[in-house]
Amino acid sequence: VVDFSRDPTAQGFFAPERFESRIYDCEVTGEIPKSLNGAFVRVATEWLYPPRYPHDSIFNADGLVAMFRFRNGIVDFTERWVHTARWQADLAARRQLYGLYRNPFTDDPSIQEETIAKPYLRTLANTNILTHGGKLFAMKEDGPPYELDPETLATRGPMTFGGKYRSETFTAHPKFDPVSGEMICYGYEATGLASNAIFLYTVNRAGEVTSEVRFKAPYVSMVHDIALTQKHIVIPVFGFETSLERLKAGKIHWAWNARLPTYFGILPRGGDAADLRWFKGPLCEMTHTFNARTVGEKVILEAPVGDSNPFPFFPADPGNEDPPTVKRGWHVRRYTFDLASRSEGFTEETLYSHPIGALGRIDDRYISLDNRYVYTQFTDPTRPYDEARAGNLRGRVTNCYARFDLHGRGLSTYFAGDTHSLGEPVFAPRHAGSPEGDGYLIGIASNLAEMRSELIIADATKLEAGDVARVILPFRLGSQVHGNWLAGDRLVFT
Ligand SMILES: [Fe+2]
Image 1 (tube, protein in one colour):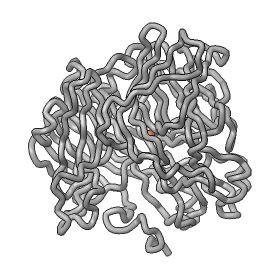
Image 2 (cartoon, protein in one colour):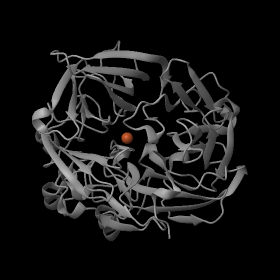
Image 3 (cartoon, protein in one colour):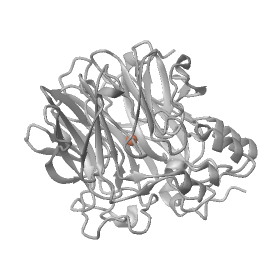
Image 4 (tube, protein in one colour):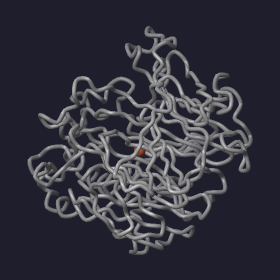
């Protein structure tokens, strides 16, 4: 019996839909810009079977990938589960075999021996979806990426990189160098559960591994995202902890610990582990980065950053909680690391004290280069909200996108409407050769009144003017983790 009534997070708009679908020629309001040729791809977390533990993280739900394929102002939609080994095992058993987020000691006894020995078999490919070397793949940071058919989104299987990628895990945030065409990727807990090994790889334009660097983190933590410059790689380590003892005790993988310091590893591109330098400072919460650059002897990083635990399902152990005075939320901050200094410290500046969300994007053509604009979503409680139609989420809906100017000229904002909640905004250039920031913000909105999802397309240079088009779906999409715009020339579509 499939019964989601025990899961309080799976109700109302957030009740799982659990189907695979295809819509030819989607309903559209406004006019889709004809220059947008390519695909918006995204991945949502959705349970095929209800979780075994009601306090589990939504990050432990299956991956449901979707593609909005744009051709000359027309959009076709496809959505499919990632048929991971875990998804297939659950379907064969007709129930949830897997226990808590990244803890195989809580799995069904029938599979525990295998999942403890090979925890990467538990991966869900539910966090990000990207393309490199002519392959489309979905990924989660606890196992290998899963390759997908770019036309049908059918699952082809785990990627092996010809046996040259040796980490058991693969990040959900590989970085792409727009100059060299290389992918910089890594795995943390690279040699097994609660290991502090990080393996970092360079993969060339053709998808071949060309270098591997192995090193150890100062402590085992969630290394969800990194930042890339033309000369360096920045590796943030902060705030979360785990251990084999903790996992054997049946607890969820991560605990927040407000007493931990933050480390930033700076690795020269092309260097080896001996060249890695760790900087250390007070705790900050940097799940995602915007971008970084190397200027002379300095590495400069911008990111959406907070000071407190962002995930209530990864609570602190007693004594390690955030102090009651801690401020919640994220801001646009800049970090500067001086490689000429002998100090292990770094400088931190808040560029905008405006509250933002934890997700942040840029024009991806400027990854590792000097960029001017960053994009994020945020909650503006002063905007109108139609509680009668959209329910009692007043003050809590993510109703706006923002573009922040790193050159200090302020922000511009987009408002989605009084019944809508927004996910991550993704930047799509207006044309292949458009200057930085000249293009569109694309993302999924939940229409809480109509109980369906919409794809928003807003002109990134005129956010206050509202959106230029919306793709209207006749059903709800699951909660998105990440999405990406894949311009037509980045994938071979049949
Ligand atoms: Fe992420």
